[in-house]
Length: 187
Image 1 (spheres, rainbow, N blue to C red):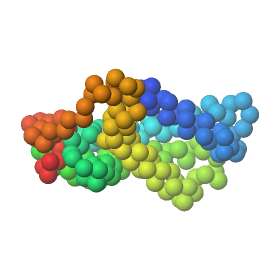
Image 2: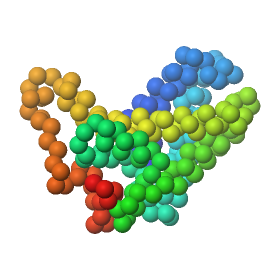
Image 3: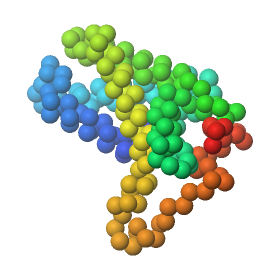
Image 4: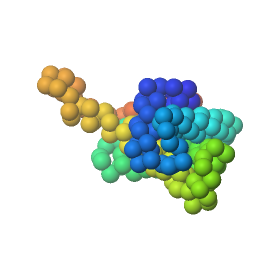
């Protein structure tokens, strides 16, 4: 939870989001010298609320919310895994089930944002759009977790690229074992 909120990657994403919102002037009611900080802090508050709800309820329901590489072969299989893990989470016995904590966190965080957003951004349609955007962001994070190492290897400079061959073993998944069971039984 702390990594998602305070890690440089998370803060960088928050800064990029606030910069984009400032560039397109959304919400336009936030203007002047404090507009960027209002947007940044609004997004960070949403992340703190959403992540706290997801972590709390997920712990109660024994969900593992972490985004991990699949260890699978083939682009299609890996893409399906990244898409599926947006809405499912592994349980201690290894089966995947709906990520109820994530659903509650995403919806709860975006509904809570209505308390400080300008009133024209608190409609059902706007809130639903933010919820959908949050799930799309999760998909992006999952895709980067799954394919990012390959992209970094592909664009590594000279000797670095050649010194790190891609080796995927079918014997042991790259996904860590949880309480003695793999997060997904079909691996």
